[in-house]
Length: 391
Image 1 (cartoon, rainbow, N blue to C red):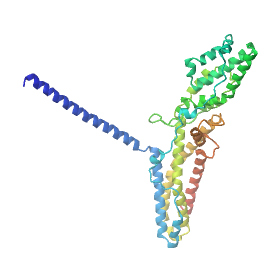
Image 2 (image 1 turned 30 degrees about the horizontal axis):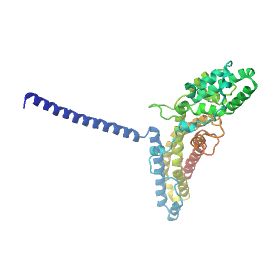
Image 3 (image 1 turned 135 degrees about the horizontal axis):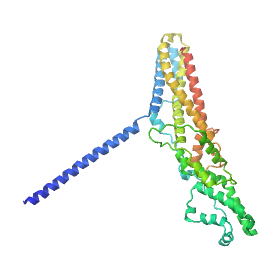
Image 4 (image 1 turned 45 degrees about the vertical axis):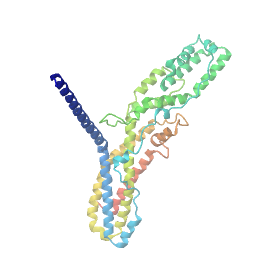
């Protein structure tokens, strides 16, 4: 074999070796990436970890109370069978929290399908050549006009209605009658146009998005945001000024992630109180049984210590729970005018989202249930503390 052939053979072997090593390195890097991704998904946030610690403390207190009752009189221990826990989930709190979908429905579920306006024929359109309305109609039928965003469509209809008033005196009777039908149709659809401009765009989706940057800290609603929402709810067809520019300016001022973080925070504490409720009711009932048994007095010191540890965790979270409730209430107040723009919601998906998260008075409102759970949780702790005669 010649020297050249040997060199060529060695190059082939070297190439195979490099490919093999490259594949190994690629597999190692891919494995490490997937492992880190899986670890990140499984790691609970500090907020979720505190919630899990609270639930664990409650369960431990319940078990201690059960054991203490069993050690007392047999007649008393039989009463434990009548005390049932309403919920004892096996999943961790972080896993339970992922079950709820807090996302605002996608665009197609948020927009109202509008009926087309009465059409002007070509002769009628040409009769408007001396009127500024013809320019607006021409733009609407252009490629750009057919691709208008919901906010742009609302601004276009505002310009159309304004121009129609200016052209009214210069039209022949038949055309004037036809134009009045178009104007009436657009005025009747104004609330739907406004709904689409607010709910059908990307601004509201970003506002309710929960995909905030890493380390994002929840921001409360400020007076500027509240005034923007009120302005959007009050836009009228006879609005004075350049609605197109002012509407886009207002929409750009709406912060991203604020609403989504408020909903996520409120849901976190709603779920925490919901999951702890059953065990706390059982703890209250068990403490009532112990309160009737004088032989359990000597062991109440340890029970009170455990009760104190559990209550301390609740007290640490109490201010945060109240703040989450207040922020949700402020959000609902800010959206009060926006959720009532239409009597009928575009889809059942959006209706359920609004009723649960944004409606002030609906029976399915999370806020109303959260308020009730907060009040009940405080009462259960105080009642248990009184039953165990803890200082």
